[in-house]
Structure formats: structure tokens, C-alpha cells
Image 1 (cartoon, rainbow, N blue to C red):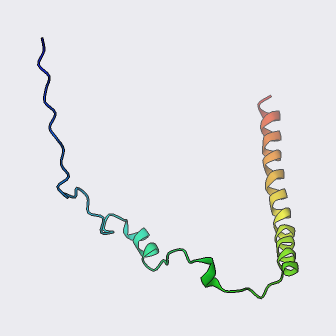
Image 2 (image 1 turned 180 degrees about the horizontal axis):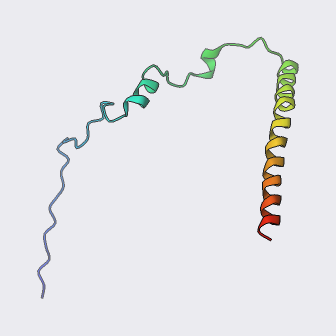
Image 3 (image 1 turned 60 degrees about the vertical axis):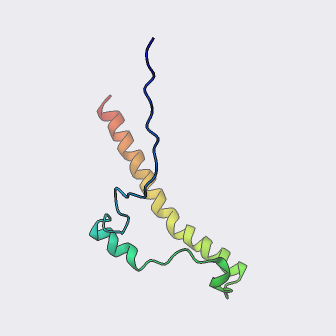
Amino acid sequence: MRKKKKKEEWVDDGHTIVPMTGEEIPTSSRAFFQGRERKRNVKQRGKSDITGKETRAMIRAFFAVMFPRILIILCSFGLVAAIMYFWLR
């Protein structure tokens, strides 16, 4: 019969392979993350002076501005698809 190999018992000795000091982050990203605050609690933000009616008006205005742009992009994709269809036909 075969003898079973004894497994070595692994013990965590606190040895660190990669230090997590922030030096592993590229310099371009490090500059972005240095001054960044953590997420704030909603309670700390305070009360807004904007009413529900004003909020709905702002959302409506946003969609009124963005709708023509989205429509242009969709029409452009449709035009390219039609050109490809007739060209490869």
C-alpha cells in the first residue's frame, strides 16, 4: 500500500507579499483618488430648496434637450445599417 503524504499545516505569520500602501496605484490614478472624500450620509447633505414641481420640470427639460441628440444617434446607426445592407447585398 501507498503511504499518505503528510500535509504541512499552514500558519498565518502576518507576512505581506504586496504592500497596500497606495504605491501600487499608477500616478495618474493616484492623483485622482487622493483628495476624494468617502460617500457622505444623506443626513449630512441637508434639505434642498427645490420643490417637486421644479424637479419634474428639470427632468422634463433634460429629456427635451437629450431626445434630439439620441434621435440623431439612432438615425445615424440606422443609416449606416441601411448603407451596409445595400452595399453588401
